[in-house]
Amino acid sequence: MIYKRSSALFAEAQKVIPGGVNSPVRAFKAVGGDPIFVEKAKGAYLYDVDGNKLIDYINSWGPMILGHAHKPVVDAVIEKAQKGTSFGMPTQIETEIAALAVSMVPNIDKIRFVNSGTEACMSAVRLARGYTGKDKIIKFAGCYHGHSDSFLIQAGSGAVTFGTPNSPGVTKGTAKDTLLARYNDIENVAALIAENKNEIACIIIEPVAGNMGCIPPAEGFLEALRKLCDAHNILLIFDEVMTGFRLAKGGAQELFNVAADIVTFGKVIGGGLPVGAFAARSEIMNHLAPLGPVYQAGTLSGNPLAMAAGLAMLKELNENPGIFESLAAKTEYLHKGMDAVFSETEIPYTINRVGSMISIHFSETSVTDFDTAALANNDSFKTFFHGLLEEGVYIAPSAFETWFLCESLTYDDLDATIEACRKVSKNM
Ligand SMILES: *Cc1c(COP(=O)(O)O)cnc(C)c1O
Image 1: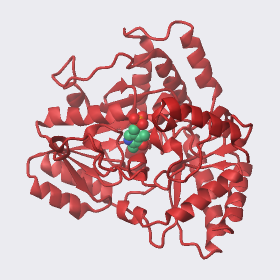
Image 2: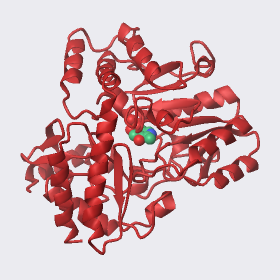
Image 3: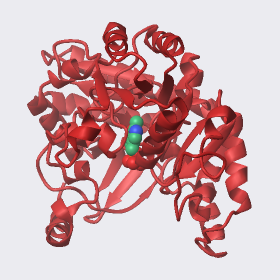
């Protein structure tokens, strides 16, 4: 495939945008080569500026669960845009999407909308601190909760891809309040709590980790966290920015039947527009301004275009819950197909999958936490990534990311992807 025009556009972009991109992973630094500039997308396919067609396994990093340019979502945005794009005053659609979200997700009474997953997690932690009157938080190595200061301590996703899991610019004062635990290691969490008695406001976790590749929670791990939190008066925050409205209507809380105290959302909830949200029981949410003392605000929060896209998306998922099973079946099919390909080679690999999230680590060991994810062979991943791209299959340009399937993918697309894996595996 030829990417001449993409490379030219990238050169132009680099002159005026740091690294040529507005979010680091897009720059392809982890895999080498120039990023691909998109012209348009429809359903499961991306069309780039050089006229190449790619099967998309990123889907905007998750939001496009029903495929790109999904008609009900696009129509809802167009209709709203004609009535004005922002007012900074309440609109009825905010209540509509809030009521629908609250009805779909367990254990929440109220929800507040923000503009990104970062904002949602940042606000959720502030709320947890305000509610409990405690300062410290526990996060897990390799989990990503957006780019706000408290979370850039051993963060996953682009932060680890570029070797800056602990970002310069985060003060020591901030960093000392973020305690780091090992994913899937409950004893480690218990020890941290014991060492910091009565100081921990919350534990924040990706209930299925998706920012160090896909890593499922070990059997009983989330339940054990819940128990520890109850015993020590700590709030449990599920960061469902990735898993919310993707793994099930009610996200990971529903899938694993474990209740969180605060839940954060992003990605799918905005239908492809910039939306995040955080939600909890009334007792907790009522601590937020203007009802309570914990301040949080946003000029464009609850923006009508964003709410229209999100509402159209959630309605469709709510009315067709079979989508989650259909997506999980497609992902299982891909998993089995890739297994069949790689099991016939000498290449060490591990495939992890939950629902419509899947990833492959070229690793000798099973991948259960950040340390085991980091052991995987990045050169193999690079070859795999560029090989797939050459075959017209676009996966995340980093081994520390998950693939997200969308409902528009056909079994023919999946077969083509498995066939592409077979071809590429021969050169690895
Ligand atoms: C993407 C992501 C975020 C950050 O969301 P943004 O909209 O990029 O700010 C936070 N948490 C998780 C689990 C994510 O996957």
